Amino acid sequence: MRCAALLSVALFATFAALGCARAPAPDMAPTPPAATGEGRGPAGGVKQATVSALRPLTQKKFGSAITEANTTTLASLMSEPSRFAAKTVRTEGTVSAVCQSMGCWMEIVDESGQAHIKMAGHAFFIPKDASGHHAVVQGRLLNAAGPACAANDCNAGNTPNAGRGEQAQIEATGVELMD
Image (cartoon, rainbow, N blue to C red; front, side, top):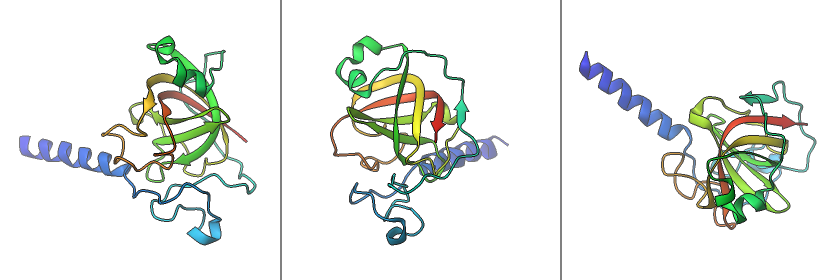
């Protein structure tokens, strides 16, 4: 019985680690859906935002309700991380990439910066076709400037914006997608 429980835990941990993994994207430039097979990235399956019309989403609110009234720019989160330490922050931007395995992370960009958003404890997931939609995110700033992912989130270097400068990292408690 104990062996079965340990095996179950090991299998769960393995699947959780592999669920977010994907091959590195060779280039961040959005490619037309016809060239990549129904809007998927060339090798990794991360859907990039394109200029085409967005499909309306059936569900738009995920996780906890967004209660923070003040929006903080991504640039402010990166330039003054100590100011936002241990505080709930609200930020927004356009979804530029989404985990195509589970929807457990996304990346957002605005004119001043970018952020990697992890869904808190895999408690909720966002639609895999959310790229291009405007997102309002509420959560906690994890690391204002650093690599795209933590070691337990996905494989190093596997986020589309890796190598494109630093980005804020946020653990989201709530996300609202706009059309």
